[in-house]
Length: 266
Image 1 (tube, rainbow, N blue to C red):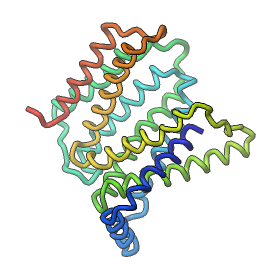
Image 2: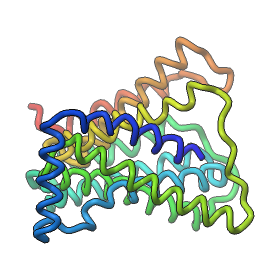
Image 3: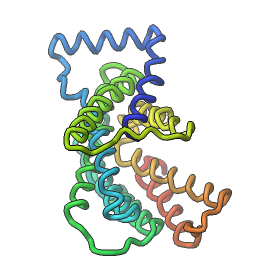
């Protein structure tokens, strides 16, 4: 249900860009390329990959815990991201696997290990493997949306992402309903419906910057932003279950270092 709400909101937000004449021209240009078979339809499926990630997250976090889920997801994103950058699959400039970028990938993964909570219980390999594929799905989403951006613009790419994802999520929910699993539980808190707006920002920024920054750097920067924001929120709104200690602060610092190493800054 959370995925459906997010995609509905994202579709509405990104539809507003269609009021701009330049965006409509870019969309028509992309449609002409598809008709001429100069742009493959499978490259429009970035939103479907995003739906795979959301569905996997909702079904595995409760099984293996948030901490282990986050570590496996980030590790999968980092490895697949550095390979995508290496071969230029996102239609951006190819980025060699240098010792600096490799070190950034390892530091970024270690930083997450430091900051997440410890998990308890038995390690279940099937959910872990599913999360590995979820990380690959996130990388694939960024990659395909970046390819759409190349032949149109970031607004068109982000707009296409959400209807594709919403269609995949809707089909998943229909199948769940056929098997007797109830999903029709709409949240009562109005602010939960803002997820679509926030998701639209992330997808738009990814579509606009991945071809330049690379998938690895964008992924590391995103996680760094999440860590820093979570620390600020935990300080401003203390939670008895969360302790902003040395490990969390040091982990966030390492993640920022990883972002610096993965960038072209000197």
